[in-house]
Amino acid sequence: MCLAIPARVAELLPDDRARVELGGVAKEISLALVDGVAVGDYVIVHVGYALSRLDQREAEATLALFAQAGLTPSLEDA
Amino acid sequence: MNTQAEPLLLHAHRQGGQLTHIDIHNQRPRAAALLVGRRPDEAAALVPRLFALCAQAQQSAARLACAAALGQAAPSEREAAALERRLAAEAAQEHLWRLLLDWPPLLGFDARRNRYAELHRRLSRQLSAEEAYALGGDLLDLVARELLAGFFTRLREPRNLGEFVDRAEAGGGLGSVLGALVRFGTAGAPASGALPLLPRRSAAGWLDVLGGLPGEDWCLQPTDHDAAAETGPLARNAESPLVRLLLEQGHRISARLLAKVIDVADCASRLRQPLAAEVPVLADAASPAPGVGLAWVETARGLLLHGVRLDGEGRIADYRVCAPTEWNFHPAGSFASEGSGWPAPDGEIAQKRLHALALALDPCVAYRVILDDADPMEEPAAGTGHA
Image (cartoon, rainbow over all chains, first blue to last red; front, top):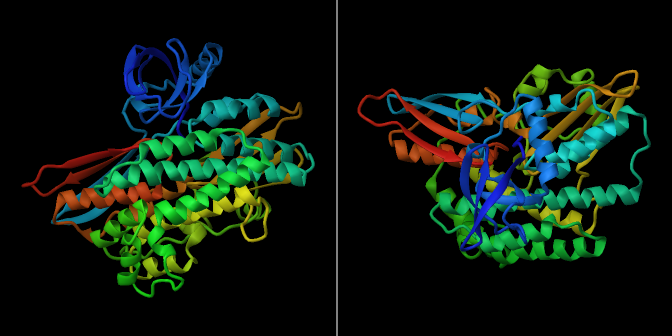
């Protein structure tokens, strides 16, 4: 089971790509699978793709839940 | 979660030009603990936020298990049909990711990113019955015209492996991949024989076999009547004539790849006519006692089980999840059994075969295949893959 890892979009890049950040780690991903992503949005990242968009409150709640269970998902896993 | 980059490490050991054994380190996160202490409706809302893959399947399994525990009535026919459509769309999406993005590059072909992106968007949307019907038709066209076109030019099915490869390579992007995979050859039958395929059984049947809710240890390393077994597309489609032809010739990895395409066609049929008699349902639930529920969903990768026990106040006291990866990457499972016991004089070829086997068994977490070489003259090889 792959944890849903929410990351913040820090920069939009050419060719439908973006730089996302989580916990001080940055990663370049593809936005080909989701529409209308803007800087500051949160996306669920999976193997180099944004799978879906979610709002900041949802993203923070999900990360808080993982932390509560001792899980610290990293962009290196995504 | 640990600090290594991949939750699933697959160590293949080679000695004297022979792959001797496989060690599997499965560190997948145990997110089920997050549900304990919550109310069933709260848990059902939470589950899809926790998992990147199969969110529909995870949520449906949670809802069905909790509903069974609460003694609620089974879904109406209309609700059950809508559930089948959602699960079929998600399973097709998961399969197409592998078929269009991951398999072609492994065999030297280009990934079809734009085509996948278009299908992903359509399959992710909430679909009305009419939209699902139209999308199902498009998926059937995809299989017949783009993936395996060469098999749809003649009525008679191929009679032998040579004819199979000719048809595969006569048309369709995945046909070329499948043809190349068959030409790549086999490693021979596993020394201990092929693993049993997990039979299809009702949720009540699972409760009988397990004697109630499964324990936490069983969920980490599940067995069927004390034996490891394989779940997923091959278990569902082993009786299909073309899959059988490949199995009889020892091409088990190719058989799994073909079985995934058959699954896509079955998902398309479910999108058009959910709950039709020709295709089995994708989910079931049962309760062995008040406050206890077990549900399964057939996902792209295989059987997903959720089990729940509620306390006297209706909150979750125990929650169990057993995902398909636990079956297929069990220490005695199909990867361990078929990934060893064969001659591997060439490290690069061995690495490619192991990667193909891992992709065919389709783990739901990021993984790495590592070839640990005891032969002193060669460098160890490693390759990564992702869920």
